[in-house]
Length: 329
Image (cartoon, rainbow, N blue to C red; front, top):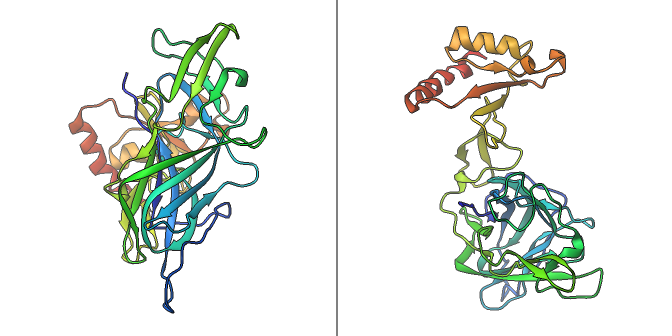
C-alpha cells in the first residue's frame, strides 16, 4: 500500500491574514536596537490514506523554539472551539490557518499541541480498506475504543505536546522566503495501531503522535497549494508579500476519477452548456456540461467536466488550445 504523508507547512511568505491566528513573543533583542520581525504564514496540508476516511484531530497551538533557548514563539492558536482537521481528507491541499508577525531569527524546533480528550480524535474507516484491516469498511470507531498515547493534564483538558526537532534550522527573515514542513506520516507503523483487549472485549486503537509528526523540508514555496485556492502559482512577488494564482479555469480536487471539474462561474457564459459549445467550436476542446447530469439543469453548479484519460500528446495539445481561452473571455 502506498500512503502519502500529510504535513503542516509554515511559510515566511504571506498571502492573507486570518482572525483565528495567535501571536507570541520571543527573547530579548539585546541593546537598544529594534528587533526585526517577519511575517510567518501557517498552513496545513496532507494526503489521504487508503484505510481511513476520517482521521480527525484538533490542533490547539504551534510554537517555534528559537536557537539559543529563548522563549518559544507561538505562531498558531486555535479558537476557543478548536476545529477538527481531517488528515485523510485534505488530500495534498494546503489550508491557511494563520498569518502572524514573529521576531526574525533562527528557529531549531517546534512544539505542536494536540487536544487529547475523549472524542477529540475521530476515526472512520474508508469504504475500501486494505485486506485484513482490523475494522470493517465505513466504520466509525467509538471514542471509548481510541487511546491517545502521551496525553497529559486533567480530565477535560488533556493534551499531547509533540516536540519536533528540525532537520535544518529555520531562518526567518523579512527579506526572503522560508518554508517549514511538519508532516504527519500516515504510513508510520506506530501512528494508529489496533490491538485486541481481552478485558474490553473489543479492538482498541492506539494513536501515537510522537514519531509520525516530523520535519520535512520544502524545496519550492510555489509548489504549495492553498486549500480553497485552486489554480496555478504564476508568481511570488519580489517583496514576498503575495502569491499570484492563475484561476482562469480553477479545478476541483479529484478523488479516484479520470474526470476533472472546473469552475466556469466567473467566465460570463449564460450556462455551462453555452460554455461547452463555445469551447468545442471556438477552442477545439470538448467538455461535458454538469447540468447534463441533473433532472433540473438550472440547479446545476457552473462546472464543466474534462476527461483526462487520454494520451500525453492529446493532453498537451488540449493544454495549448486552452491557453487561447484567456484571450476569448
